[in-house]
Length: 230
Image (tube, rainbow, N blue to C red; front, side, top):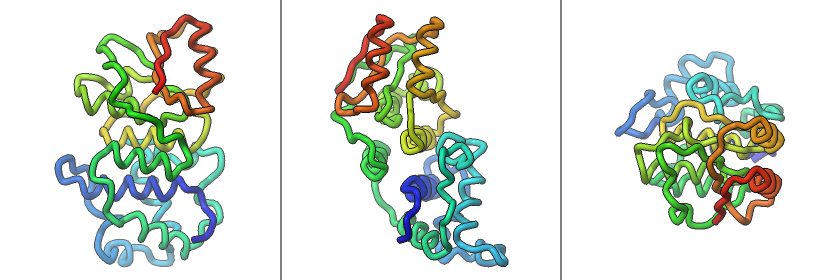
């Protein structure tokens, strides 16, 4: 496969999971349609790279954190050939990772992010709390909390800190898995501004192995916030 952003493989895999989810159907099969007859019939002169772009555009309004490719620091579609795009598509539609946490963990590894420890060991977030998820976690901690305690809200109770396209995409994929509205995502520097201005944060969760988290941990502890890492 030609060099391209690894995020595309995982956003395509997330789309494939969405299309196969009969319990919470949101769209008909496009990426996972056997043989892609609908695409072949309507594509005209468009190729596989355009198909990848359109699949993302279709979801960018509802789930922008994962699928709005214009928000990336570098366009992952730049230089993507039809051959590479078709290979991405064929790899992405292979069924795998039945449960959400297994999928998110595999995506974290594939995107070069910390895999982290046992996220289920962190204390339950209370319904009145506003929690920061530290950089490097990619939404996995919040996803575990919401999956374990459905009364919690992924996009309303959690503030996500991310400094890379890979982190933001994984947070967005977690939002898609939970069918959540777009979460609030800030950079580490923006978190410092928020704390200085008195923004509400009750505690923070993250992975101790994440080097990206160190700046945020220092800022939170300086502001007197509780930080728990696994």
